[in-house]
Image 1 (cartoon, rainbow, N blue to C red):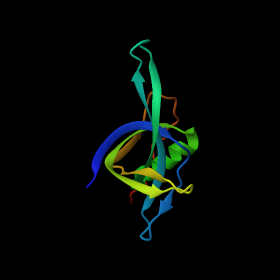
Image 2: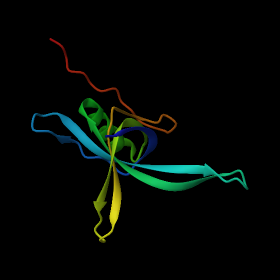
Image 3: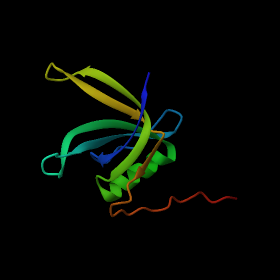
Image 4: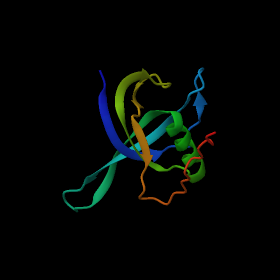
Length: 125
């Protein structure tokens, strides 16, 4: 069973574009989401925990995400999709929690300065 998640965070780096055996593009992007809360005494917002999500994206969306990240760096993105949470063995012997999301959609947050180009379409004959 999985839960759907919709959130916003920053790419942790430029994801690598990969291709399945049948030639379909895909990528796994690491997205860091930092929660914030309002301090009851001061009324100011402060960052709390950061959660890393491994977000899998397919097709033209994967290609556009990799291109936008390559051109703009660690961009801020919004994404949504089913989330699976796994506890895995860490290298230090303890356990760690992994958050995997198969994105139904992902898009840049337009509250930042981005260079985005419209993809070129193949000429129709």
